[in-house]
Image (tube, rainbow, N blue to C red; front, side, top):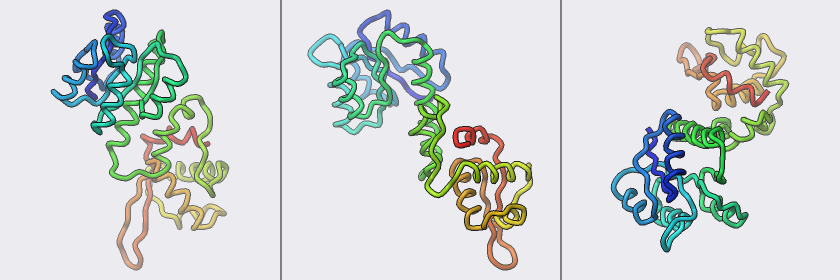
Length: 236
């Protein structure tokens, strides 16, 4: 579960944010505070993964001061700003300081849901791996592009047409494993090129790779990962 702290001085807005949060799976509300001082106390008491933070708060300090303090202390805490502050300089400063998202009041539930679910999915994906390939990283960094329906650029040297042909052939193997040679035997594409595309599909987790030892040199065998085939849509 992702531990969340809401920092908001308007009780009505805080209740809305709480209600919205409770409708999205994967999040646990640690508490609601209405000041930077109380927020710092909560940060020291327990692990806070994500703060839903207002900019304008009562007292001497603002939400931006809390964000700056979190970065200075190098806390592993992410921040989504939820604020009426729509000035470009506020937005630019917040982005430079690494906010995950920026919601301008008033906003609809769907925009709130998008911010939280996008954060949750990106967070889960990064936690699964100690290293990550470009394809998987694109799923995190280019999420907005993907959700608008725009195509995500392929790595240099790959084309959509060839990717589509190779993917179609992979699907034809169904649940059977296959090698680069198996693909080359039925396609007019070089083994070197096929390996490049299979490496990319492995990074996307669209295919699983296993190294098989037998007589002669080891051979990489691949199988289609049906759970992740939806990731192909943004590249084709």
